[in-house]
Image (tube, rainbow over all chains, first blue to last red; front, side, top):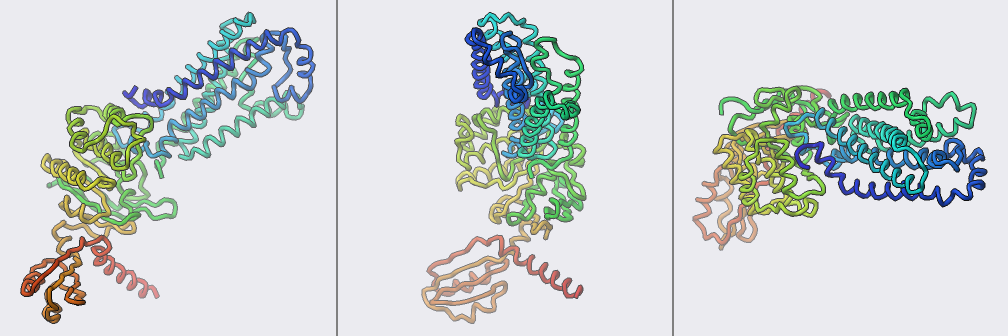
Length: 264
Length: 308
């Protein structure tokens, strides 16, 4: 685990990752088990779901009596993105700018290694961690939905998990890139969080407020399918936009990192 | 000693409007131990971090082994060992882990030599680095700088936090490096450290290089504060006109003065009387700088007058 920057970055996160694994398994299994518990008496909740406010906050109305609707009510539009975005942003922040602010980046960059390589290794460590987190999320949902006999296919769960990984990756790359560009963790994490919240609100509000409809494409969340992926599968266009955004941000970060004074 | 290992030309760095270093020019020759002396904030660390390509110069250039530090940094750093002035170690690992990690990145490490360095510096490699005292962290910093037996060592304030015994060991490491033909660039704000180990010294103040000279010449020009306690008050006049002796003053048989260069005249004169105690104060940096500062300030004043 100390062979190179990539492995060491993963090693640094091993304890954090263990806790996230535990948390995600608890949330996903518990959330799906609740489906059976609530199944008998959904009418009240379904009625509540029809209110505009609830629809706006949760991003639309779903029939909670169906398994896909149940997952699309809260886990997929809200909890999932929070999990993946928070994990990715904090990973990105601590792995590069965190090291710079602590001063250990000096010790690393004064070795025969170039900045491109360091940036790439940090980036790939983030991808691997997010994929691993996706596996945990997927496994938790498989365990949860099958225990609750919800009959959702492993493939659809994998697809929706994949779109969560891409969403997290986009925000993680944004944080990494902005950090590499500015060297300020406050700016990169602050802006990433702000964009996530605004995107989320814009996306969910625009579903019920007509005048906001035309701004919907501006929201990152617009390209994350959530519940729709569970029902209709991944949309190649949406995946393409999330991936293209990630690549663009990656390029900006990599370029910016070359030219900057480190640790000043 | 014939060709330069480090060449600094017109090297200038501003942080926004803040002065870092201004128009530095000097060479460090192959195999020499070069001291880089100056008070805190003079620009020593800025110079070093520019040479290591952590920060980019506003103007001018630096070359190491004849290669441009900006364009061929990675190649240069294969043969450079660096100790940062403000050493920060990786979290969540032991000293051994940290050296393994850095060794893997550097490549080609003789691990027996690393073990030998750790023994000599009495470094604790089993503890989590976060639990180490600053002196013990510094030992790890020194080990990682020396571990690859680099052609060039760049050490920023290397004696920081080291106790006197470990300082002696560090001096021995530098001696060995000199014998092996390694080049050493060492910054310090402590004059005796530089005097002890260096062949030549560059003095930097407020971002500008004041002078580069042989360490022996520097010593010749050093103002040394002395105190001599006599058993009986000696005739004051005999001490007032000795060559190199300045600011003589007497109080109850105690002579206080400052001496430039050799002590010979003063000692021979003092030996005529009964001496009870003799105290030589380490010349401090401010005093040695005084010589250069005074010259410079006069120039600055002259410049001011001319402008007016």
